[in-house]
Length: 433
Image (cartoon, rainbow, N blue to C red; front, side):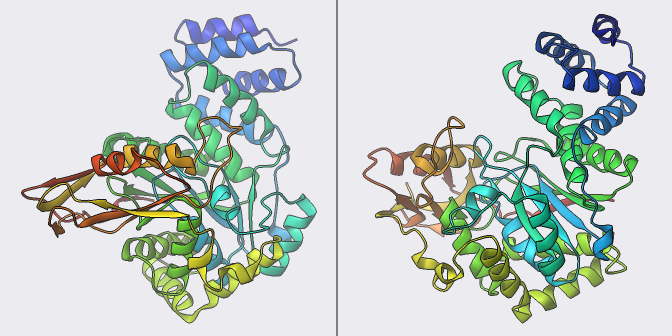
């Protein structure tokens, strides 16, 4: 029998676990030979006293092998995926998955729902009428073989220990701990069968990692842990001090993704999609370097092949492709009102966290997991940093499900208009791997 008391004593005393002991601990918890209160005690001890790289790798391995690990090598093509740490207006997966698949690389994309002030890929996909984000393993394999891409949520047999650990992390205030974040993300990504992984680690007011230093630390550890488990990996550190693209809100972001797949979207969403595609293609071995990968991705995007692939995904997963023929008609909001500039001046900044919370507050996200999401609501940013505006001119367009007397005022407070301002920095701040 596994001695949980001895295991807890090791970390309580600020000592390092042997990797085998970490794996035994997770296995004992899954078999219910370790209790929730003992795992909770360990989570706090690890949070306070730290986990080194070997312990983190062992925890990731244990979570990974707690359930089914998919292997797509029999399909004869390399498999790659992307993970974003979450941002405001981040709809990149909607364009990236079909684009990379149209370039000939398998994309077994397993995504999540909105978390806090950030949106989730599954919620955006479900804004498309009929779209199903749950598929059986056999259905996933069949669709990957036919289309080269699948976009689903995490099934119950994919890293199940991670779900159990996360539930306890949530109630013990140990979520914001880098080794736990890394092991949770990497275990799920490798379990889905991806052989090449690119991480989009965001930093700034709208990100969970507020500083570039903390983002760099997380990105470095994600890459090294992924490589320790045999996957090829790289990371981009990207700016999240301004919403990504213009649209924030589920149906609005689907509309913007459609525009980008047609070559008409905002410059930043197109650029980041191409940058991430380039790295995925390079890691998967489809292109020799990022420059060649970006050039290929750009050709495929501009040819319309990525848009055609997106429509194939929608149809294959039960969605209605006709609903996207005129995306502007997708879930229109009954009330659309402008967010006015409070004064003459230059657009100098945006509190992305507050803006994300605003969208959650008007129904575009969840306060509790049982909450329903209204796909109609959201906000479209109409200005960029450095733009000059006059008092009363629109900064953004607010989409509401009904009268909300304070929403416009809250939206105004998200933006800073000053006497001077600077242009937005490059969206990719740093590359790792």
